[in-house]
Image (cartoon, rainbow, N blue to C red; front, side):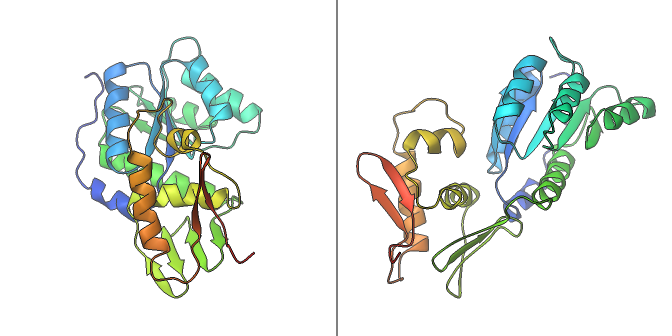
Length: 245
């Protein structure tokens, strides 16, 4: 694989931070497949765009935490993509990955609107750490960082979930599932919405993956409490709400 990452040691630390939604804009298919797989293995959602035009379109509409952008892309180069996003007031952090690693190249990338610049080849553990830092900074700039439904609280920055006085430990996918449900508290969330935003599937794989995770999540946040918060809406999907209201 050209310009491949060199190591993936230390990625277990990713379980200490919240699950992220990432967009990888990379025309090298092997490099992109590696990154998508590596990020998913540590609990994050990763989409892929193979050229600048597709990347720009997804970045404008996708609600991502961080963009990982190659510089040399077909149709639109990476710096043009970032420049157009900034011109439209899209502030999603962008980390530039490039084989062009000279000081002048890095300076140009940062001045074009990039938030960080990592030359290839790189260590995946370093890339992951840099992405986590960018995501934390972005969340801290005015986005909602805490959700509350009844006595259930979720903190996106500390990756902490508490109900009453009891801390609830969740796996990364469970955390992202709960985060998405709480972000849409009081609304019906369909299977399609969960598949696309939590599992990164743009089709129904015809498995019980959602049912299994909902069941596990319900046992963690509702078991032992008088009032259930996670409800199944028959024939429609799921909803998290305080049933006392």
